Image (tube, rainbow over all chains, first blue to last red; front, side, top):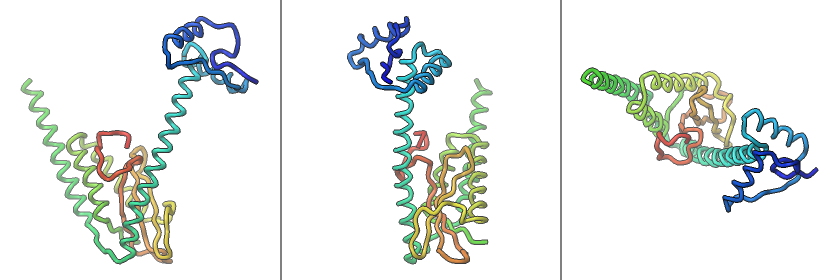
Length: 133
Length: 110
């Protein structure tokens, strides 16, 4: 089953005619055509209607861009996770080799107390500015 | 109950986030971060084996636990591969997409 991406070969609607005009105006935009199962295109049409996107073609473009963005983010996160594991594993290996350098939870508690005081100072300064305004 | 030993890199990462919160957020958000940290500490202490094993050797294993949602942090920890684990090493704290040691907390998402 083959379908053009704009509206499945049916008579152009006002929206698709407009989008074709836009496509002509933008030299980086071309009309694409590819096989698409009926049930998938029906979902695209429903999505377009639910979101008020004007045409299935607009919905298809939005979905493609969104899905590609998600795929890219997943790859970035996977690469980040691999990097994190390598860093953490090198530390575990150092410990296994006898490195017994550890810190203390007090260092964190002290940093938290300093932060609390600083936040209160900032809030008090903002209140003074507001009172003088 | 095993002892949780924080490595310098872990403490540094935690304290950098606390310092950033001190300058850019309110006390409630500082408390959220601190309670998330306390919760993840408690979970690791009580069930260190619940974090998925990520890497291991004959003697040690590396695992990870997430901060409670919606806080986007991961805590990496290791321990000896022993029947009874008496020490757990907290080695790193990272943001979910962090891929370098030095980064700007304002550059969300990381």
